Image 1 (spheres, one colour):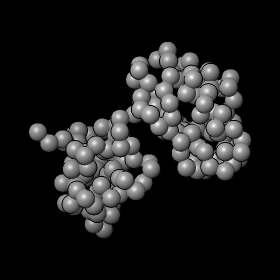
Image 2 (cartoon, rainbow, N blue to C red; image 1 turned 60 degrees about the vertical axis):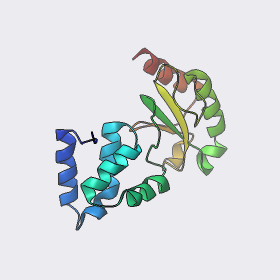
Image 3 (cartoon, helix red, strand yellow; image 1 turned 90 degrees about the horizontal axis):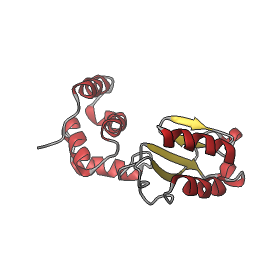
Image 4 (spheres, rainbow, N blue to C red; image 1 turned 90 degrees about the vertical axis):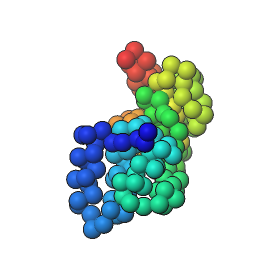
Length: 160
């Protein structure tokens, strides 16, 4: 049986499509809605988006594989994206990644922690250069990272 959007997400998709001159133009926001519902963009999710937008699956796959903001594999409950570009890089992003790997029990870019809570990836610039180093966890930004800040956050997430 083919995947479907939940009734709530289907309404959101329909409203989103109505705001664009054609269905194809709505692809990026529809992919975001799909990722929010399913957690990542699997081939089945690409087929759903293609069917919804009346496009070939290959067109959707081209977009998903081009942009880094779409997760192509399952992610943890707390998907940690550490900025590693210039400002964050010179302010300790590599040390942040290493410390997060130790605290969360998963290597950067290598899947999900055994408890299913954490995944860590490097991200391109997240636009918060003045508060480097920083990371985005799900939809939230955490800036001016230190070991003590990371300890506080990870311990909180582990207890949830």
